[in-house]
Amino acid sequence: MSAGPGQPPATLPSEEDVATLVTGHSRQPSLLSLLRRSPIGLIGTGIISLVIVLAVISPLIVPHDPIRGNLRTRYKPPGFTADDGATHLLGTDQLGRDIFSRILVGSRVSVLVGVVAVMIAGTIGVLYGLTSGFLGGRVDGVMMRICDAMLSIPFVIRVVAISGIVGPGLVTLILILGLSGWVTYARVIRGEVLKARENDYVMAAWSIGQRPLWVVLHHILPNVIASAIVLAALQVGITMLAESSLSFLGLGVKPPTVTWGIQLADGKSVINSAWWMTTYPGIAITITVLGVVFLGDWLRDSLDPNVRGRD
Image 1 (cartoon, rainbow, N blue to C red):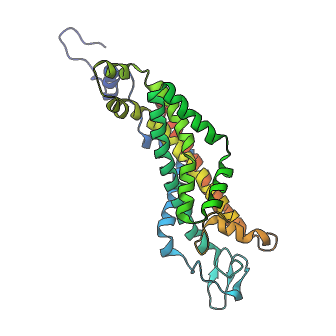
Image 2 (image 1 turned 180 degrees about the horizontal axis):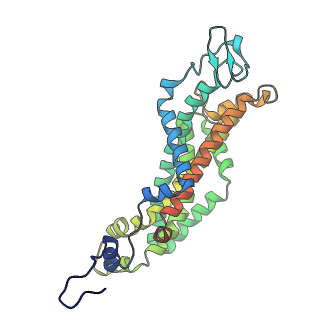
Image 3 (image 1 turned 90 degrees about the vertical axis):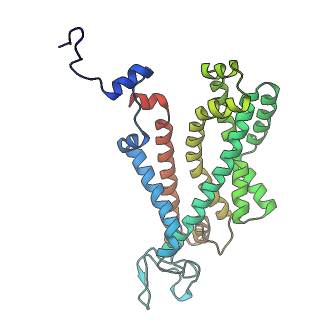
């Protein structure tokens, strides 16, 4: 029943209704509320959170020394209990080292390489893409031809070649992966910048005499950073796989540093008789990469304003 002239309305509008009247759009749900409704997002977040926690506290919870071995307990199957009462949950390797302890400690290197290398590649790629897309013209053409030249060489071949020349090592591996993975970010961000700079608010900023750097930082960058975040989440898994592959080939991290790739390499020659040496590190890699992919897919949908508006 509507109220008469001069009378207060029968019901007050809700806060969401007010926001809709003012902005023309309904209030979008927060990322946390979207995460609660997404099984894929919850699974991915849970896996990644668990891996990060284990990587941080692994030195405190490992049941055995991951480096020191015992030749009397080499190649023991999962569940083996030694004479001293020590139980090896996932078995031992060719030197009698505990597989479970090595997987826990190996997660530290995998997480470190994945996160730091992606941060390096993402920073370079975003700055490169912003510059190329914003300047346009001949500068954009030259910068994109450089990207095409980089993409003409397959990523794995490029990384293997550089690693073979420079030499293996943890810092070297992070720098190689970081300096080799920026091209993807550059091309994606450049495309987003080309679209963003045609928006009305960007044109308005130009018309009132805003400086180019101000326009980029306050009007263009906030509109392309979501794409960079989603791409970075997906690239973490690819980078971790690259680290494992290079360590498996002997071009990555060198022993005694423990990585999942080195564990795979140790067990490849005895996979028929000591299957646990490759199976469990392989499962750890698979689960972690799947968690990253799930999280990246959820972020891609959640950061899309059209998808959030429908939800």
